[in-house]
Each structure stands twice: as structure tokens, then as C-alpha cells.
Length: 408
Image (cartoon, rainbow, N blue to C red):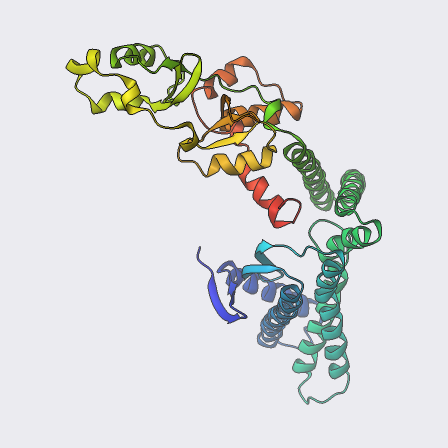
């Protein structure tokens, strides 16, 4: 569903997702129901719904205000934001580039919690001044203040992508000088807290409440899986930064003599095993003379194949997209994604071709480094497909690494 833009500041669209309407109703109903149960003698049903709706709407307004402050600080710390979408109790930022300094990230992480605390103190103070004759308005102001206080404290919990988690890893980064130490430490905390939540949920399940026990156990399992995924991501980052093309088993070049006829080329094409490989590399007395695409067969009548020579259609090697054998793997992935067919020619230091590399080769190398050795039946299914096996999204991972400033 398409989000609705509510305003635009500093060139950044601020949007609200349509689900917000449903959540606004549910949140309003929850507050109204709570008031009916506890203050039924003070407020009637209409007044309870009025308090519920304006409390929910005012809470959203305060969250939007906090995000404006947060965006201002983030932009000043070098963050590039494409757009911001609100999902009632929070916002999702589409970021093109993260802050590259520890101190900058500390400032960014503190903005939202401090804004929540400031808003809470102001609203609770105003609510206790008795400036309004109507008790309903006082109730709304104090409730919004208390909710802001709650969200401020919630945001400071050092887990996941909450501001508290980002603050913790940024502080460790600031004092240790290592960006990854904070990330590793935060991931360990998330794992331990998730394990604790899972065990607590099991205890609650068998001793107190089935519903809350299942809920807490489920949240613990989600946290454990998230921590494991993050650990896998760390390992993959390390592989992509430390590995070189020379470590990968390359696809051998299909060779043909420059003075071969189209008939000779056609025989080789019929016997090929990889339907995605369309290139032949020409040799001339043991030296590389260029390359051709097998599709040149379509440009000449079959009757002329025996007297047409492939040397007349040769292209220079330097026109084939290539990388050197000592190129880092993440750079190789970027280069592969810039090609139309997903092939790269690998050269040695003397600019001599060694073989071809494609998404398939890179993907299996990474999976093997991760300790995942696939059965031969699965490998055979991907051998004739120039794509990353098992849907592994290596280009997206490289983009995330660049956005975080881990690679340049």
C-alpha cells in the first residue's frame, strides 16, 4: 500500500503508512476501554473515546516532532536520508549513507530519547498546573506525557536497532576505536537477553500464564534468530572484504583458433555444457588474440559457414569486462552487477586471461566459506544459471556495507 506524504523538510518526504489509520483506531479503542474499566463513574463512553482518540493522535504528533529533531541532527552528522515513513509508534528511515563517526552516531542516538523526556516533562508539568477547566484535556495531556516518558525509556534499551542499541555500540566504537567491537558486543547482549526471555517465557508458560508465556517465548526465539542472522552477516562481511578472486575456482575459457571457420565454431557450440556461456577466446600461435560471441553464427548464412572465418569478427580482449585476480570479492560483485550478462574475465598481473567468473562461482565460494557445502544435486541445478545460489543477496550485502561505511 502506498504511503501518504504529510510534509517535506530539507528535501526529505515525511510519510504516513495507511496501516496507521487502523492502528490509530486500535490504540484509541485500547485507551477508551481502559478508561471505561477504571473511570466509568467519571467519564461516559463518548468521553472515553474522545480521550482515547486525542491521546493517540497527540502521541503520533509528538513522535513526528521527535523525528524532525532526529532528522535535523542526523543530516548535520553526514547522514543521507531518502525518505521517512511513520508506522504510528515509530518510523522507518530509508538511508543512503550512515554517519561515519562514533561521536556523530552518539549524538544521533540521543536525540529521540531526550526529545521524549523533554516532551514528557513539559506535558506533565502543564497538566499539573490546572490551566484547563475541562478534566478531559488534563487527562489527555498527562497521558501523552506519560507515554512519551515510556517511549523515551524504551528507546534507551540497548537492543537491536533501538536508539539504546545504537548508542551502546557507538560508545564502544568511540572509546575502542573499532566500529565492529560495538556491533559484536551489542549482538551478544541481544543473544543473551533473547535466551533469557525464552527461558522466562517457558517458566511463565508452565507456572502462570499460557498466553504470556507463549508470547515471551516467541519474542525470545525471534531475538535468538535475529542474533544468529547478524552473526552470519558479520562472517559474510569478513569474507567479502578479506577474500580475493584468486581464491575462487574460475570457469575455464573456451578456446578456438583465430583461423577457424564458422563450421568449427558451430560444432563447439553444439557440445557446450553451459547455456549461459556465449563467449569463445581466440588464440593465435599460443597467444591470446581476442574473443567472439557465439551469436555471430546468426549473422552469416549457413551456406557460407565453411568459408567464413571467425578471425574476421574478433573483438579485443580489453573490451571484455574484467577484474584482476587480486581484486577483493566485494569489488568483484559490484563489477559483475554492472555487466549485462553477469560474466567477468579474470586477468593476472600481466593482463593475461586466467578464466571467467560469474554469480554462480562467487555464490558457491561464499557459501563454502560459511561452512555450507551443498549436495551435488542442488549444485547441478544452478550450474546452468548465472545467479547467486539459494537466493543469497550478495549485492544487497555489499550495498549495506558501503552505506555503513565499512567499505569505500
